[in-house]
Amino acid sequence: MVVMVSFPFLLLHAQPIRITATLDSTNYLIGDWIRIQISAAHSGNTKMLWNYPQMIRSENFEKLSESAIDSIQQKDFLTENKIITVTTFDTGVLSIPPIICYFQQNGSTDSAITAALSVYVSTVKTDTSAAARSIKPPFEIPVPGRSVWWYVIPLVSFVIIALAGWYFLVEKRSRRKLIITKPGDLRLPHEKAFDSIRELEELKPWEQNQVKDYYVKITQVLREYIETGLDLPALENTTQEIIASLQSRSLDKGLLQQLNYDLSMADLVKFAKEQPTAPDHLQILKTVKEFVEKTHPSIQLPVQEGSPA
Image 1 (spheres, rainbow, N blue to C red):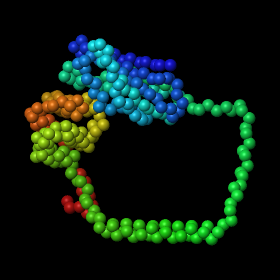
Image 2 (image 1 turned 30 degrees about the vertical axis):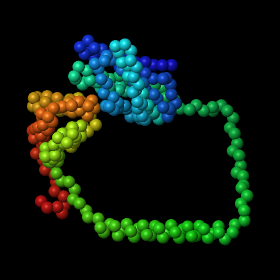
Image 3 (image 1 turned 90 degrees about the vertical axis):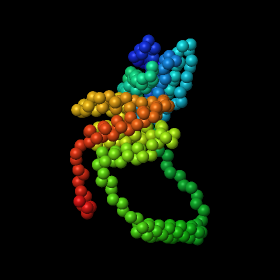
Image 4 (image 1 turned 120 degrees about the vertical axis):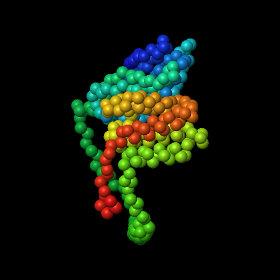
């Protein structure tokens, strides 16, 4: 039995794209592999960003793997298929949550989600009406006569293991004497961010043909600052989710709009091999620095006991 759930959505400039999610069956045993096929049918000017990992946001299901992309050309349309394999150890009627798929169309990046899928997971059935069977008695295995080696070999093995353990402990203690304890990083989140930004300003990775690596680092600096300094989820969230969470704060709308533009461009560089210009490299650096300057809280970390004030 094949279950197909279709989720039609946006029409960008009269160019349709259709996302569907299908299952091989709706009935599974506990621990079975559940194959979810994601299909995206779209026109030639649309590019699926499969490099964005499809997340299964559910405590009931565990993601096992993702397959390679299988493409089928159909006249003016291209159909791309991917299989996501999950499993579960819960039973009953369970719901596979919607899956987010990202795509690029007409120069902009957007996303769509599939509909939720329902499956029934049961345990292995046992026949309780069958008669109980008796347990077979233990049987003996004939053992040949023991020689002196039966006692010598275990004794020698024990001595070797004891000597090896003693040597390991002595060696470990001698190594501990050479370890120098380093103090913890007492920098505030915004101080760490500024140090990383200054390092990128000095190194200028884009001049060494390290454009993608540069955008990965600058966005990582921003995400770590938002998560540790502003106490907002950012390390595992998408750009759209980060901007949505920042909109709840009293931030300058122009700065937030510029941040959204720069992060979206960084996503295209990392996942769609976009080639930004030299002013773009400097602009995202300027935007991140300005964002940290205007949002960092004026707090101080507690001084640890024994450390200088």
